[in-house]
Image (cartoon, rainbow, N blue to C red; front, top):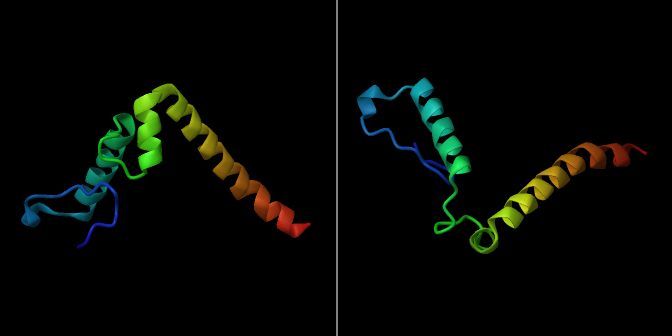
Length: 82
């Protein structure tokens, strides 16, 4: 199975693999990444550079971007109905 996530957990023993183990492993890996991001191996270089220069501002920008996505997801479909 090919991994398409930016973080790919690997199960070393193929005989012990199960879907439940894989889901748990993926979720734990995502949780670890979110709690301790690594700006030295970024998915987005501009975000990593901001994180290195000003961590508080990077966190604030992330919250702002997340809120914008929520508003767009909720409001844009509503405005198309009018």
